Image 1 (cartoon, rainbow, N blue to C red):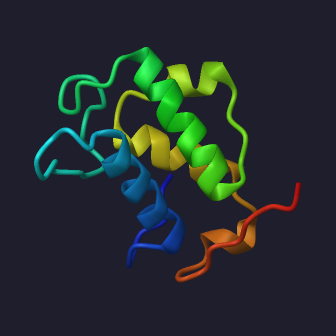
Image 2 (image 1 turned 120 degrees about the vertical axis):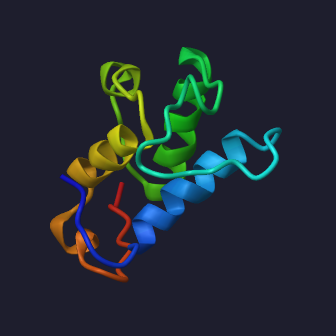
Image 3 (image 1 turned 90 degrees about the horizontal axis):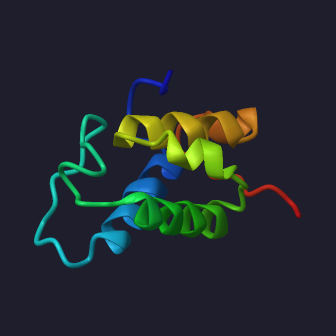
Amino acid sequence: MIAAGPTQAWQEQVYTQVRKQVWYLRHPVLTPATHLQHDLQLDLLERMQLGIRLEYSLKLEFTDTEIGQWHTLADVLACVQRHLPEEATQPGVLVARQP
């Protein structure tokens, strides 16, 4: 489950990377309920590209299976949160894992 309360730094990073991925859409509405394929027209290849963007920006690694299960922005946020160190899920903290 995604932490409630103010938007955390890692969540903002996810939204920023999604906006970069859908640069061709004018002012996309991004909420946890946003569907990646129906609302943002992201096919599987573009979801994989989004996964790579997030891996580089957040210093995380996702499996192809995990990325394939991303249907909504809530799915992406939940997956990212599972991979973050616990201290990074505290409000206002963005912690990158060391390689």
